[in-house]
Amino acid sequence: QVQLVESGGGLAQPGGSLRLSCAGSGIFFSISGTGWYRQAPGKERELVAAITSSGIGNYADSVKGRFTISRDNAKNTVYLQMNSLKREDTAVYYCNAPWRVGAEGRYWGRGTQVTVSP
Image (cartoon, rainbow, N blue to C red; front, side, top):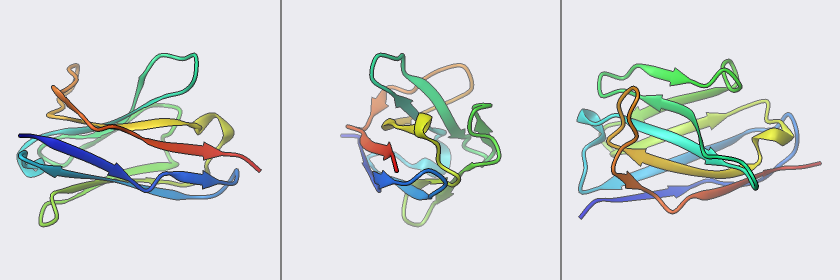
């Protein structure tokens, strides 16, 4: 049984930072691409960042230069470091796997809320 568990969300001020984690069980991130998506109220879900099985990061234009995706194979965990947060980054963030370019994976986590507010 595959489980993806997100953590690390919370409240941050504009310009602040948060680091999200996605811990996987029943799936090996070292051979599986992983994506971070987000959905804000009233908006469609969008891809924020993803890391391929070979470790290449992909980013939405809106977060390039501010967010960094990384992976710890030993912990089977994928991270999303979010810096210079903006109010428009407020959303529920979801982990998705196995991800590949152009295709969402079958498995989703339950999400973690990120709120950026003074």
